[in-house]
Length: 448
Image (cartoon, rainbow, N blue to C red; front, side, top):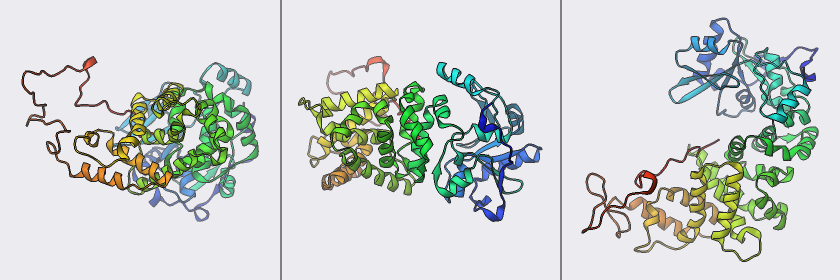
């Protein structure tokens, strides 16, 4: 059994008058789940990041529920419930497009040695149900181990999260040398939370990250890729990637990019001005209820490297540098191809959109990537201090053009939406059965 599970003291309970959480700030559908489980005699808590954000006065993105009800019991309690997961069953309770994730409290019956031995061979298979205290101690950081009790309206703390939250400190639950070896992705989550919340990583956790950063290559790369894109929201991209570079995580995952930072000024490298401009654009988009696509994020991350010809000094063109840099990162992180190809188009669009639109050369304004290209080029202009007058002309062209109008750049269609055939020419069949008028959707384009 983990040493940090052997606690002699009970939890710290912060009563309703002593905290700022109000039911008005909790999602109504999450409240329905909590009240329903509670009415059936089960223990039901609001758990994790939702409690943390509410205590910080932030608006949570997700509201998760922890309960002592088993997955099948949760499914019987809700007609709109679906069980997912193979290693550990989770209950997804759907309200329209919204999902309230409901998890049975987990425990652990393994020793430290057994868990480390399993971690060396792959994902740890430990699906034991447990108590709220055991569940709290299985979480990654103390500030994420807090519970909100819907019955008493109190906050329950088994792991010291309230104290760390008040002091704005990010600390692992238990020995970080053990926790990061069991799940290396926790190091990236530490970067994400520290940069997003403005917290300081406590020294012991920080030391473990410096020592174990290369373990990130042992993690499942699709999961790592997902965490990379989660570093960008809330205008925290620059701070997050500074930490990634400082801890060595960036060197493990994107060695060309890390090397370029080292060779072009380190803390004063050009990459930071592009990420700073991306953060400003991200905040503007979020205030308007939108988001910045992963293709824009990836393109911005590699802009400085591409403009430097890949940082090799061998005279390669920006086009060659772009494909080499993006291809290496895409292969390492198992990145969705749609994101990779769109990012390539965006980087190449700087050449197109740096000149005013001219007759016969406006076809790009009707490309599916054009809206992202405008966003990306605004970021580049802001970072480099250049005028965005040409971009406004392109944007005006895109807004004003109607289907079938223009200078012949846009394909004309008849009333059924098909291309007109001229003379004896025939329609060319697309390769591999692809439909040219229906571009493939960009899967995982908005990972948060």
